[in-house]
Structures are given as structure tokens and as C-alpha cells.
Image 1 (cartoon, rainbow, N blue to C red):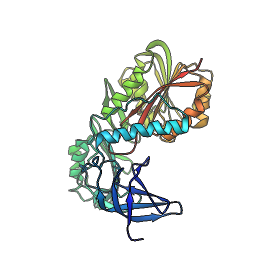
Image 2: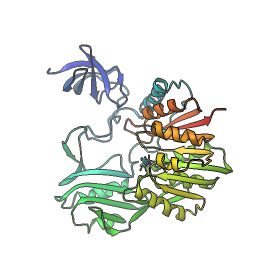
Image 3: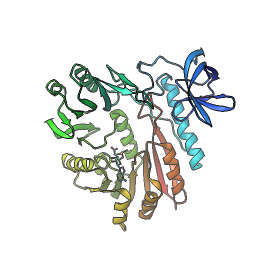
Image 4: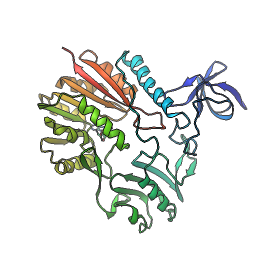
Length: 397
Ligand SMILES: C[S@@+](CC[C@H](N)C(=O)[O-])C[C@H]1O[C@@H](n2cnc3c(N)ncnc32)[C@H](O)[C@@H]1O
């Protein structure tokens, strides 16, 4: 099959255009609804095809020239006007929750990101002499001079790196909050890098500066260790945490569980308004950070537990929490964890989700005991198909 003519009917949940050819669905990168194009097929499966645009015959009025020139990177929506990308994400949350959780109302307007480029405070780069990335689903390396989604501090480090001998380096992660950490896989001379960062790890060993770096969110400060998770879009994290707080009745008699607590950010932020907070987290660097953050923010009513949420909730059997805030990874809570939370029976649950599909599955598990009061999508990751949601649930009478 040389080239085929395809019309884009709609976008799929991964931001790819969907068209049809001989009764088969065709997924096409960088293709918007109403557009028509000659498409080259790059993957042929029994039930579907994947293609790349060779030549546009009709272009959507919603198409914009992306600021970032790189192809097949993570920015699957960079060619779509921002307000249309927001509409797409809001509808995606609505459709998935309706389809898999039977939820037909309650989804609010999506919260836009103040920065649509330059918002990321963490990136991981592949290295082959220069820093770069692998094209989606391939090992085709593309060198880069600038990472358009990343903040200025990260791009300053990239400029320095690209003037260094990187022949013995395979991967570099840069975390750039109030302070900057560089994590190198491989070996290199770090003299020039020390001018643009506060901490350098090489092959898991601290070789320069601080063991942790500082980040601020709202009126709190947080230490972040090398392997700890930290939210990537500061401005949106501030909006999201404020939403969590605003969704809850402030009551100094109430006890809060902060499940999947990372470096303790949500629990510490909430701790001023409640009697006590218990955070649970599986990553050791995150819990070590959380324990330092508790002291840094003088949050004496907060306690952190290292371990798997489900196992630790079983251990906490009989504990009376009034509120549970859960913020799991993309895999969501899963049935076992939902049952553990239902056993604790908090009067409110706030579910922070980065995947509407696993969110919908978990809401279905909860539907007999909890009512969804509202769902607010957040555009935490502009230019990508990803969308975050905050769901407020109330125990049924
Ligand atoms: C999306 S992050 C949220 C972190 C934190 N709430 C925040 O806002 O920064 C999810 C966290 O869950 C942790 N995690 C993953 N699986 C876990 C499990 N089974 N039990 C406890 N924590 C887990 C990860 O290490 C990560 O820190």
C-alpha cells in the first residue's frame, strides 16, 4: 500500500486522528478532525492500521504551527489550538466517565494551565553524544537544543550539556524547582554543570552539592530526594491542591488519610486545617523527603508510613479517618485498595487521578457506598493527551 486518502473523523484518547480505509480503522499522528490527507501506512494489523501524513489536502481551522519543531515526541496535541485541546480533554473525561462509570453529569469546566509551554520542572533525556529523545515507539534518536515543554532552568542545563563530552553518558534527568538536581547515568566531567545546579548524582552516587533540592508550592517548602515523585507543573499543582482543600469541610476535629502521599505535599498542605494527617507511600526517597518536609513546615500533626497502601491500610484496621485523599499512579487504586478504603469508611474521599480510565473503573467499585459530588479536570500536561482530574465523593447515607 503506497499512500491512501483518509479523512479524519475524530481524535482518539491518545490524540491521534481516526479515519477509515476499507472498513478498517486507521490511527494517524498529527491529524485533526475534518482534515483530509494522503497517508503512508506505517503499521498494519488485523483490526487496525497506523499511518503518517504525507500531504494534506484539507487543513483544519483549528490547526496551529507548534512552537516545538520536533516530530513524534510526547506532544501529541501541539498542532491543536489550546482552547480546542482543552475542549478535547474535558470531553474525554466526560465520555470515559459516562462509558465506564455510568456518570452522566457532574464534570465541571476544565482548569487551564497558566503556562502552556515551558511548564515542566522535570525531564529525562536520552543521550547519544548530544541530549535528545527517541521518536515515539522507536529507537530513532533525535538530538535537541531545547526542550520546549521544560522550564528555563532545565533549558539552561541542556545548553551546558550540549557543549560537554557526553560520549560515556546514556541518560540524564534534570529536576529544576527552586533548586536544580542533575542525575547522570554514565560518566562525564561535571565542572561546568556545577555552575547551573545545586546537586549532581552520577550512577546513583552524590558527586556534587546537596542530597536533596528545594521546591515550593503555595506557602509550603519541600525537599525532594533523587528518586521521589514530585508534580511536574508547579502552577497547576497549586491550583489542584487548592481545589482539594476547597472541596473539604475545614474542621480541626477531623482526621485525614493522604494515600500515595509522595513527598508529603498534599498532607502537609492540608495539615493546618485538620486534627491529624497520616500519609502512606511506597517509595523510600519520597518518605525520607516527607519526613524532612514535615519538620521543615512544622507540621507536627502529620505522620508518614512507608509501604504499600493496601498492606498498610490493613495494618491501620480500626483507624477512624474522616477524609481520604488518594493520588495513585496511572494504574489507579484497584479493587483491593478500594475495598480497604471502603472498610475505613471515611465521610469524604477526594480522588486525584491522572488516568480517567482507571478512575472510572475505581468509581464503579465505589458506586454503592459513595456519591460523586463533582469532577474537575485539570490541564496538568498541556500539548499532550494527558489529563488530571479531581473527584469529590461523599459517603451515601
Ligand atoms: C501521582 S504520585 C502522587 C504523589 C503526591 N500525592 C503528590 O501530589 O506529589 C503517586 C505516588 O504513589 C506512590 N505509589 C505507587 N504505588 C504505591 C503503592 N502501592 N503504595 C503506596 N504508594 C505508592 C508513588 O511512589 C508516587 O509517589
